[in-house]
Image (cartoon, rainbow, N blue to C red; front, side):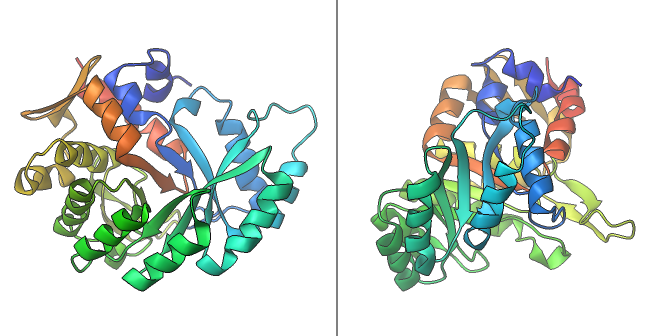
Length: 308
């Protein structure tokens, strides 16, 4: 199947290709997909050699399941096509698990590389503990609470050289932060020069009403789009005011986003390829998703509607 991702992959260097490159960290182990370890590992191996591999980032795994992950990788069929080593991993861990991660990496790091850690913190002391535990060997993203102003916590991340993470949804409506809370978080990160990643609730390119799980009777809710989020982040990084960016998080009209080879335009705001390259390399990292196929496949018709 040819999708928007595979099409732009053949035109590397275009604005859309830059925006999408390695954008999705695969979190198939987590709800609502909640795949078994063998199924998630097999899916990642398949995606990493597929036509849409340009959009694929790291495999997300909890520290407590690393032994299970290693066994699943070892059990992949011999002779089956697999991604080139090393696999890049983003490991969910607490500060207390840092020694175990270093020990695991000493054994498996040549082919299964932990280059990113994701943790949680709600205070400056907890941020300091994470910085002390993981040092400079890996990139550390710290999930912050965003219902209250996170500016002081973002400043602490900047001081310790850590990165920020925001949870943008979940499997219940109350798991989704408000648009102003997201814009406030992104703006705080932009002002402090702190790169960020996002997770949860970003299966779709544009904001809209969607089922929150894969159950037949799943509740529906308003979910954010990953294009909304990352284009908003890019505009804030360039200095566009928060009140001008806020409507982008709620944009539902595909035709409002125009994709051209050298730029992406949202209504009156333009982002050229050079700017998007800088944004992706120094500010807007990736997002975790338990589905790789949904974000990729839904992009094609949207880009058809908005491209020229």
